[in-house]
Length: 303
Image (tube, rainbow, N blue to C red; front, side, top):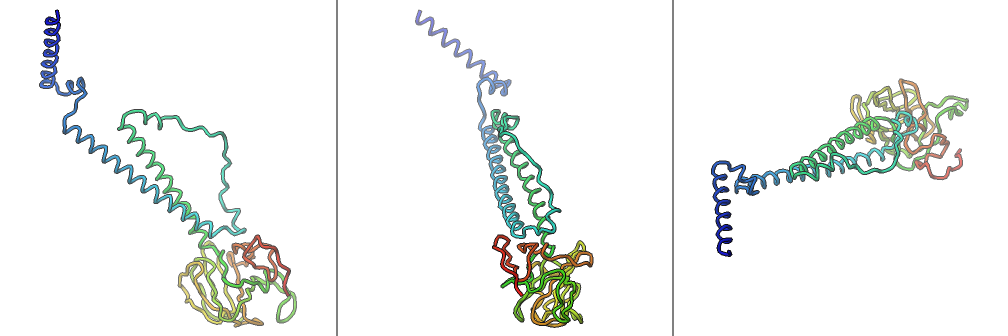
């Protein structure tokens, strides 16, 4: 009985081996499926495919990391520029959102439970979509930076900021009568540098009987700035200047009682209150109160 059983087993194994060999000979694909076998070439091709996908995933991850850093730097630059009170209303209102946090259990995660091919495809698709969102976010922030950087929001005097005469009605320092003051006067020593308040084109760099040596910058969108009573002009007409570029030096030319900078911001040729534009200057700031720090306790008015 034992011998008979052994013979049957050997005959079965032999028939199975012979059948499998015939299947390999006449239908290799079926034989590989039945035996879960792959040729050396197929295994190498699979390894090559996986290596290629891993390289692509790593490249997308590296790109995602670089773009995330780029977006962070752009946001920091935007925060540094800040937004003056005059154009807060022009900012897009953020949409109100809320609700419970429910992790996504949809199609994206289901794919991961499938084959490696599906998993690689899902990961690559998700990374590419995330990178596309980062591209749009970076473009939006850079556009905002370019638009805001051209506006006259930077202080034309960078050290020891002190305002000797605010915007609005005042007693004229020469004839002692009431008059309209169309800008603000920055008290500064003779020869101190005057900086461009924003990106612009020099419309004028010359003499005026009232303002003395003056520079007028065109910032686009109908905005321009005037820097008057300078002792020396450092730019020429038609020159493009970046934000906070030195354009002149403080002086006492024209109709003035002493060295200072008369600064104006004009919209379509009409003067506007610079207090609403200069970032860090409180809208209600008065004489001697230009601290550049909105949180600092308000000082008493000067003479």
